[in-house]
Image 1 (cartoon, rainbow, N blue to C red):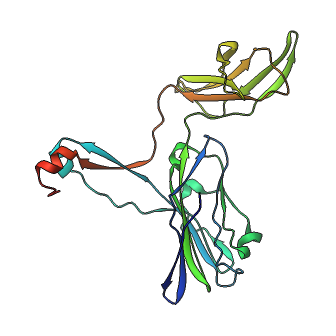
Image 2 (image 1 turned 90 degrees about the horizontal axis):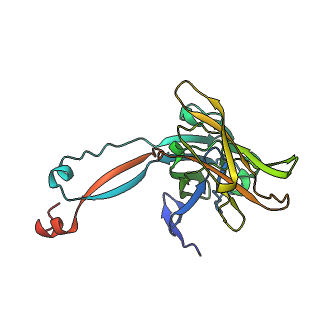
Image 3 (image 1 turned 180 degrees about the horizontal axis):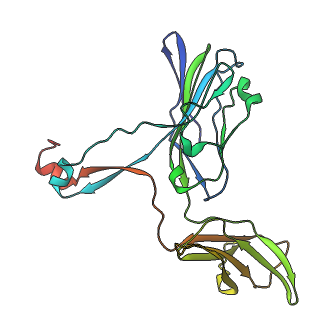
Length: 256
């Protein structure tokens, strides 16, 4: 999809914003994800400053209870700072603690306007709207994207030789109360009925790490995907805004 660029006069600089639909990036739990940010107005690192921030995804839910609508409160949440850069160095004083040690940047590409961020060990709390903001002598601008974390982790698949041939196996990175394992091939055929699951480790709180083995006639050159999730849906970071059902809006003449 082509992107529409807007250039506006702003404090003597050109302001660049991506006016297309917000890009959605999906990642598996415990994986590494790349959040792209390329700004063409950046030419060199002299007087370049930029930051990466995260905010909750805002969801609107329709309610028919007018009192629930009226009584809702709107709490402003400060964006979480992933990284700030100024005077040719990263500044960590304002970095949110949950991102410490999980971020990689390619300093040698900054001068070409590539401010892309790599986030490691992705988890459900990382879901959100991410904004890359930059300023240089040639302009200011930003890139905005939404990071969504999928339900299942996808551990690496290994092949083992056994007496009856070859099997595929994987080990969960995460801990699960009631782990659900799914095996599929490259055509997304469900092979789970041919797999076994055993508890590898158990914590005192009843959470498990598991080992699963696919005993289906495995071919080493085939692609297999091992997907693991918990039976209980994970909690995700969201800011909820209530809106009145349409029939109530009409009844009250749009007063709300």
